[in-house]
Length: 141
Image (tube, helix red, strand yellow):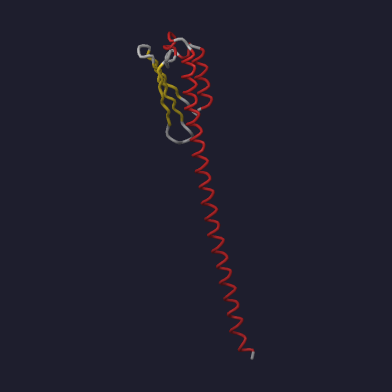
């Protein structure tokens, strides 16, 4: 009679081993899923930061154009890369740009004949390549 129970015990042990392997595989699959979610969250955070910086650049350019519009047309030449440091309104705006955008560079071209101002803002976020935002405006009376 004892010999008849032996195969049952062997089968139970095998079933316990199979259940343990199934549990380990389930934990492994779950771990890969969690790692995937962490990677996705990191990518989303990076994209959100990039979008915020682009929006900041657009807002800074709009600020400059609003400032140009409130100035007199004869002061248009002051809004160029060469003349900006000597004009306090423009220089204050440039300092603001450098405090908001990471590793910011500003290029401004003012053309009195066509009464236009073009601005190109560039920045570098971490190890990524430089990004830039360009816009232009025509001075209106």
